[in-house]
Amino acid sequence: MGNSDQDFTREFHWIMDMLQTIDVGLCVFDREFKVKVWNSFMENHSGISPADIKGQSLFAVYENLPEEWLRQKTDTVFLLGTRAFTTWEQRPWVFKFKNYRPITGVEEFMYQNVTFAPLTSIDGSIDHVCLIIYDVTDSATHRKALHQSHQDLETLSRTDRLTGLNNRGYWEECLSTEFQRLKRYGGLGSLVMFDIDHFKRVNDTYGHQAGDAAIQSVCDLLRENSRETDISGRYGGEEFAVILSETDEAGARLFCERLRKAIETNTVVHDDVKIKFTVSLGISVFDKPLKTHAEWLVQADRALYLSKENGRNQTTIYHTR
Image (cartoon, rainbow, N blue to C red; front, side):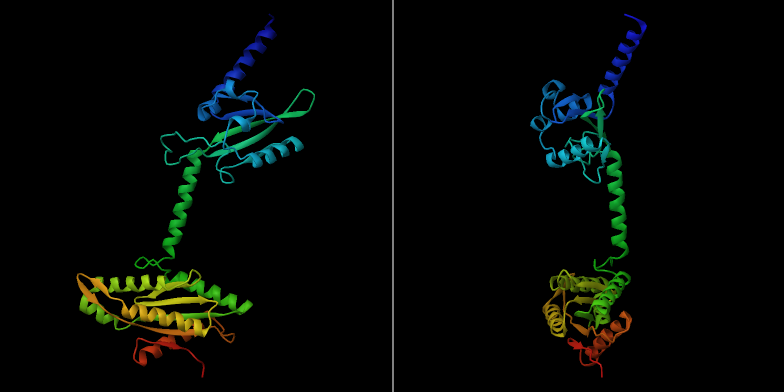
């Protein structure tokens, strides 16, 4: 054997050894998805040996593959003769391998980036495709945790900590958005402002923790009596605000009276002490002449003030004179 033949044999051995030991998955198959190459990475993670899958249809031997998606992706590679890619954000995995890494054990399955590489024969035809599977579980886990942290921070920035309702700043942003929508497209909308009657008396008599318990109780009843489309917020202290989308005057009054009666009949128990209280409410129904969302808010606040002036524990609707 000449030196050139020895060099070729040596290089071929290196290539085959590399294919087996490389820390990525390699799966080569033909147009009928019959497997030609199945390296150690694929064997170790699937539990299927090369001897058991070579020459067999990939779909017949390995279950849980997204067959329709994989066929469409591969057809494009055969047709165009160019590489294709998919990332874990688009599809978490192609092969649903268990994740056995101890550091990233929080994930049940391996996240994968996959390259579809066309393999050109000596005659220039493309009859095989190589799937290259990269284990990106570590980076995917980190990205997911970072994204969740950002979401948590965003939620905290717009949430009132005591009640879990929208805080004043974010709620006013929602009010501005709803106001602009109604001004532009028309429709129905009502704004409700309400607060706890004689709240200072509750704090002075039972203490601030009891006052917090009263506020939390109001919020629980507010959630029970609200629709998913209603936008509630803690406006400040014992004062609350609700945006009722697609709601006319009658609907707003019905909502307020239901809430008012629920709070009136409710009893808050704090340190074995029973606390009763009521709320006063004001309604402003959206009207085209309103120029700003702040003006809409002022009208609801004036209606609330009238409820207070007229004896509390009631609902008042703002009407222009």
